[in-house]
Amino acid sequence: MSQFDLVLKGGTILDGLQTPRYKADVGIRDGRIELIGRISASEGKEVVDASGKVVAPGVVDLHTHYDSQVFWDPWCTMSGWHGVTSVVIGNCGFGFAPCKPEDRDRAMLSLSRNEAVPLKTMQAGMPWDWVTFPEFLDSVDRTPKGVNVMSFVPLAPLYAYVAGVDNAKAHRVTDEQLESMCALLVEGMTAGACGFSAQIAGELGNVQLDYDGTPMVTDCMTDREVTAFSRALGSLGRGVAQLTGSLEIAALMARESGRPIIWNALLADGALNQHGKGEYSARDALKQLAYLNEEEGLRVFAQALTTNFVSEFTLEDYNLADTIPCWKEACMGTIEEKLVKFADPVRRQAMKDVHDARGGLFGAGYDLSEIKIHWISSDVPDARKLKDTYEGFTIGEVAAREGKHEIDAFLDVAVAGQLQVGFATLMMMTPPESMKEIATSPVALPGVSDGGAHTKFVTTARFPTDLIAYWVREHEIMSLEEAHWRLSAYPAQAAGLKGRGFLAEGAPADVIVYDFETLDSLPQERVWDYPAGEWRLIQRAKGYDRIIVNGHTTFIEDECTQATPGKLLRHGSD
Image (cartoon, rainbow, N blue to C red):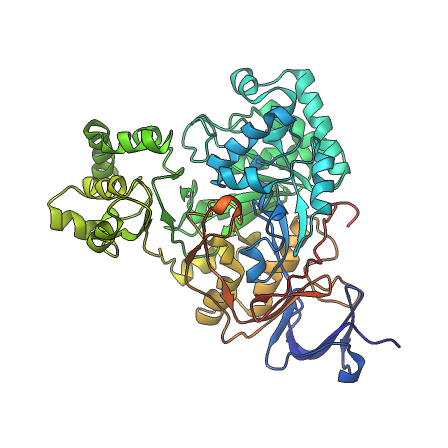
């Protein structure tokens, strides 16, 4: 017998299927797990001592926005740092295909606001060597990847391609146009997409708007449109839909398609995500989910936010206060226009009125007095004086020192720093019992990572590490066996990602090896590693000895090997 390419010796196996843990060796050959059992070290070309370590399946991250980032970052970091070996892109109805050449700038403008991906980075980093969705998948296929990638067909590009964005917003679509879009959905799925995605948030209460401040084209989808797309999905007898919207719409999708729905998002009571508070209380959401799944026979999964939430933001590019008219108006436009708006006493009074009535910045639960002035760019005039005066202080401390309303203190610092000022919220700690309620619910899939989006605001793509190190190790909200099932096999099942998400002989070798006692997310930092010199917030990880994708090691002790063994996973064939 020829040697194994890689042998993991003596690790504790957690196979992702909730099998009780056991100690064994793992032999990998030609990208697959060939043997789990006793293997001599002499049988491996490379042997890794995994004694005292956990050997588990790589994480499946169902909710990412790496649609552009995959072209310049093969490992889709942050996800690739935190044990993720497979990602799903095209979420929330947003993406870049199909797209006519003349509409490319419009598509990037939309993503620059609703998912806060830097425009200059997309312009510099994307190849745009496609028009149709199948051509987009082919481009992703050609691109070197350090993780496996599967994609939804996002619905917003279909509207743009067939009807034009502005026309569809104003008039919706004709029967003929809707039929054409459904045909494009089927074409995309035939090429390998796993289903369709949409954000249907309505005209009011939406914080992920288009670049011009109007709702996204999918936000005002009618039941007629939802039904047509759902039936097109159902006609193939496979696939899944992802929805950011109400559970009522998720139920409609499930009824009309007969297919599973992945709904965003399930939040613990009192928790926030990057969009503020959830539409439902945890109890109400869980009650509705139980009814849909157990009584009505509709398969509706819920992506659960399983990280304690913290954010950082600048008013240079903040896009998540759009439910408040005065903030929405001020946050639109060029930097120069925003500086004028934020300095305007009349606008400020409106902001003060909202703040005093609602409490909390943007009405989102952030205590403005506790928000810290984290950094001020060294490139602005009088930077040293501003840094010495304000960096490290809270808005409350500045307001008290200078005898100002908190809104004035907040905006005075932002304007003095030409909006290149980073404000940091406190970590909002979810009580363990509240997290346990949602994270262990029957249909919960940990995540809502949003990897690749909102990269100047949040770092929720650290969720796999936090679930293992914080919620399991520190607070024991579930067993480690259950955690790996929810991180890997269960999301793979929900998305119809067959054959991945677990460790078994014959399965693809997507494997993580880590030290349970030392695994952790490192502190947040700001790095300038995006095309066109743009920066993002990141959190790296520690404690991962190995991250293995299709049998090849991508990270050793958290350092990248530069290997790119990832594959495009075409639903229905992979």
